[in-house]
Image (cartoon, rainbow, N blue to C red; front, top):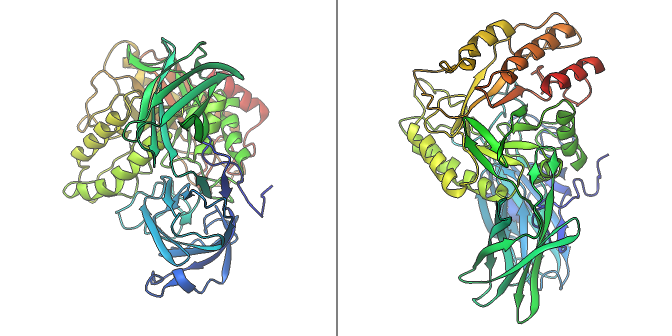
Amino acid sequence: MINNTCPRPEHPRPQMQREQWLSLNGSWDFLIDFSKSGKERAFYKDGPFQQKIMVPFCPESRLSGIAFTDFMAAVWYRRTVDLTAEQISGRVLLHFGAVDYHCEVWVNGTWCGTHDGGYASFSLDITRQVSCGSNTLVVMASDDNRSLSQPRGKQSARYHSHNCDYTRTTGIWQTVWLEFVPEAYIRRYRVIPNIHEPSILFQVEVDGAVDGFVVQLTASYNGKKAGTRQAVLSRGQAEGELPLAECHLWEAGQPRLYDLAIELIHDQGIVDCVSGYFGLREIQLKDKAIYLNGRPVFQRLVLDQGFYPDGIYTAPSDADLRRDIELAMQLGFNGARLHQKVFEERFLYWADHLGYLVWGEHASWGLDFHAPGGGEGLKQFLGEWMEIVARDFNHPAIVGWCPFNETWDLDGRKQDDAVLRLVYQVTKAMDRTRPVIDTSGNYHVVTDVFDVHNYEQDPAVFAATFAPMAQGGDVYNSFPQRQTYQGEPYFVSEYGGTWWNPSGGAEGWGYGKQPASEADVLARYSGLTAVLLRNPAICAFCYTQLTDIEQEQNGLYHYDRSRKFSVETYQEIRRTNM
């Protein structure tokens, strides 16, 4: 059930929580600015707001109360919020989970800042613009996913949804919230686990503090203190190593997590405190396999695109995020490719707490990164990708990064290899602890894991494609003229996609010819999957996909997450996967 006063009320940043926060989800004034002339007409002062929208749901969605699915050049939001003298006694931070695409913010008629990027979280310090009592917030978002100048993922660039592109998302689509922090406060932290000591390396960044402040970290496991360590702040940063008295490893299906408290201390007093958690786990690539905590783990993944019938990009509730993971795990999958969308942190929270392996990916489709001129696309892509990697670095469930997917040629122009190489290098510089796939499927330039996509529907033909690998022969390379296998771990990161409409109709879209019956669907799934599981040269697979999405009818569940097959079929899928 949706809370119409404050939908999605849970804390949106579970790894860094304070008690002093206020959700701004709920009813906002709203208007569509088709001509994108609202700034000239000063809508931030007195716009013609005649509609109401339920934030954080996008205006295309039914849950927003708008359900307008045509293109919108710009949209405007407005609401008032009452603040107390205590709340504004320190700093006031305005946070956005995600706004697609270009966002500008005004508070009490004063411009406060801007952000480009439809998927990264961001915040603005609005301390100087707020006052005790009533305050008016105005947000403008402009969006043009047909421009080739912004990542759009699977949002349709046509009026209608088609093939594997679906209903668009414009404007606010994740939680908006205020946070009340002291003048000197903890801005972010990063932990790097060491399973061998055991310990964590930590880096804590602080705003507004001078040298001499102390940062104290305390780890606990199941309520029992596991270690504490202090570090002196220097130039806004403190770092060190926190030894742990006990070693509990985070593993697939075994989500052993430590709680973490971080305190900023000055003159023996606690200035600021945040709570979070971390997992002890190590990812390695060796013997052409992906190792987790010193042993190879075959990644049995399912493609998850994170769309919902009523919320589009936004899950109706926190429970819906958890349910998607549980549906996959019930079928014997141990993780997912989070495909062409940056999932909200609450999804990653549940992945962390359920022991679910995920690959983080950006929504790269829709962006021109082709030569010549690929650098223009890079400007729009790289900054946001860096924000994404920084935000999600501490989540143990993320076992790899994949910034791009299927970098096809555009109007006869090939991908700019220098763009893919640079994004790979920047990602590795930011995170040495995880593997990076430069572009999933094609065309690889430099990658830690070699992955391919193959939607062959005949298990016999599929088996013949990969058979030489099992005997130590050449690997299957989908585009040998454009990419070279160099001995990396081998991952079939898209396969299956079997088109099945149980009503028997021909409506919809999927891969290959529709099977004749549910039994044929199961035979196809079992046959294709067994080929990959039994091949010693393959270390991971990802089946397309978890649910139907609009016209794409190749999910293991219906779009509304109801069962698409019989109980017996689901049991056999699980037996195949396990």
